[in-house]
Each structure stands twice: as C-alpha cells, then as structure tokens.
Length: 433
Image 1 (cartoon, rainbow, N blue to C red):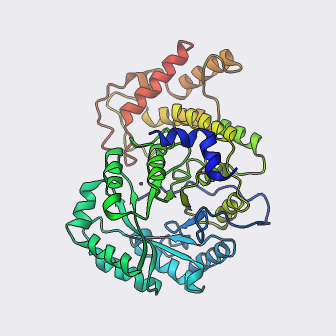
Image 2: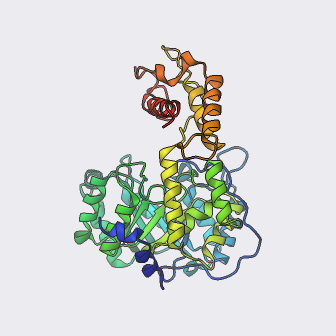
Image 3: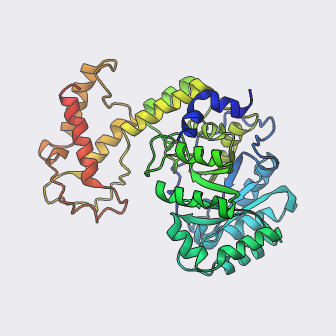
C-alpha cells in the first residue's frame, strides 16, 4: 500500500477531502536514540527531502544577536549529508541576518545540492522588488527554487501588497523566465482568507501553499480554520503543501507528563517530537515539513523520523487524535508569571491560579472524569491542593471580567476568559462531574 492509499484508508484524509512572526520553540528536543543514521531521506516529490530546514532559529553567540556561523555551517553540512536539502528563510528572520548566514553555509556546496526557499516579506511597505533582487544577490544565484508571498491573511493583504504594487506581475514574469522556479505563499489568516487565496489558483496557478499543520491543529485549531480543511482543499486542487509549525512552537515537544508517558509506552525509542513529525510526513501531498532546528540534537532526532520513514498506521493516527482531544480539553495557559496583570482590583491571584492549573496539567495531577482510576482520591487531593495554592477569596470564581488585566498582559492572554474556563472546570470537579 502506498502512502496515499494509507491516508485514504486511515479515514483522516477521507474526512479532510469532504470538506502562520512565529512563537519560539521551547527548549531542546530529546536526543536521538543513537548516533547511526540509516536509510534514505523520505521524499514525496522527487528532489526535495521530506524534512526541511527552517532558518528562523539559527544558534546565536553569547551576545544574543550574533549568529554562530560555525555551528550553522556544521548543521547545514550534516543536514545535506543526510538528505535535508530544502532551506527556508526570509529577509526579516533574525533581524535580517538569516538569509546571509544560510547563504554562507550553503555556498560551500554545489548549487544543485540544495533548494532555496525565501520570501517577499514586504508587510511594512518595503520595496518588494528590491527585496527579491537582494535575495538573489545574497544567495549568489540566478534563480530561487521556491519563492513565497509572505504572511498573507486573505485577499485584501494580497491585493494591497502584490496587485496594487504591480509586484505579482513581475514575479509571474520571473517565474516564466525560470528565475523563480516555484511561486507560492505562506498563509497566516482565517478560513475566509484561505478560501479567497485558494480561489485565485485558477488565475495565478500557485505552485505550493505553506500552512500551519500539526496533529493538534488538525481538528483543534488555534484559529478558525483547521489544518484538515486546508490540507484537504489543497489536496483536491493538486497543490503541494509545505508545513510550518509541525511542533506548534515547541508545544508538541513539551507536553504534559501523563500524555508523554503514554507516547513513550507506545514508542520507547522515539522522542515525543517524533510523533508530530511522523504525523505531518504521513500525508502524500506534503512537499516538506519545516523544522527550526537550532541545535544538532534537534536535527539528529528529526532525521531519525524521516530516514527509512514509516507513515503512521491507522491506530497511531487515532491515538494522536485522542491526544489532541485531551490537550484541547485541558489547554495550558501560556503565562510567564511576569505579574504585569497584578494587582487585580478584586484581589484575584491571576498568576497563582494559572501556575496551579498548568502544574496540574504538566504533572498529570488533574482530574479528567469520574471514570478515571482512583477518581475519588484524586478529586479530594486536587481540590485541597487548589485551596492550598490559592486562598479561596483569591480564586477564579471571584473574577467579574472587568478586563483591566487584558491590556497589561504581554502574552495577549484573554485572562478573564481563561479564568472563567478554569473556574468552570473546578466547579465541575467539585460537583463530581
């Protein structure tokens, strides 16, 4: 059975056919299980490795801003030696330094050994044509393999940046002349915007779309359009898909302990992150899966997922859907404890509530439902721990949603809404539901 037949059999693709500046990755992934790298890099499309290198997170020196070129060179060499040949950058990455660092590493190798993907990042009114010409100059090449209209939200942003400026006509001529081999876009908007841009395929013949796709966004999206819908529509149209955020900004490599233990029980020798990469790689319309591999152990671990690649089986897909369901039901609050929201005029301990909730999720001490093993004991312990961590007069049920905390939060957390969700959950635990 080939990969396309597998996806159809799995039911996930069948459901789909019926029908994202990024968050920094969190910490390092687990080390690769061994140092041997066997087999060939998986490919859905000839000449392009299924694992792609996202060049937005190159390592930096101790000053925090200078790219560590020696390490970049080392990782690019290792990646190329093991079949990773798609390198995705942009003029705006790493304060404008990413393209130059990427080019310096790649130019030490034959041009035909790597694939350049970069972007027209004219979001703030920059000269897009000059940006394109500069990219050709930096990479010292007469063509760009994949060129993206960067960070599109929908038709309005597309019209303002590329139609009204005449840029799209220029890029179409560059594609016709072979200086842009593939012209596409990266999508960061809502469902309506996706539909608008996809509808333009008949006019402009997009060569590829870059979308946010992972096993959580598949059916539990952070925006109003799920990855299953987008992938399904692109598959129907025959448009190759480049995947960004396969780890959802690191969240799928740093998951709650209980869920991680279940993953390890099924695949003891694989990292937690490998589940996310194998999910993305199991769909046949995927051109490449981008990973911002800052460290060598990121790269090595991901190589173990894509060398001698094995698509997820139907039971594994169902398992990840269960995982996604649980993560969506009990989502972590991305609170850093900065205290900017304090003091609350009603005395609520906002950071304390979020800290208690997140800790209970990460340490697997939270209460799921009455069918949970040891439910009665776990329920009593959880409620007692909440009262100990946050005194009763400062708990979530006292929030009146005045909104004073919202504008103060640098993480843009909808604090009253999250407090209401946590209070609703805790009340259900008190009622034994």
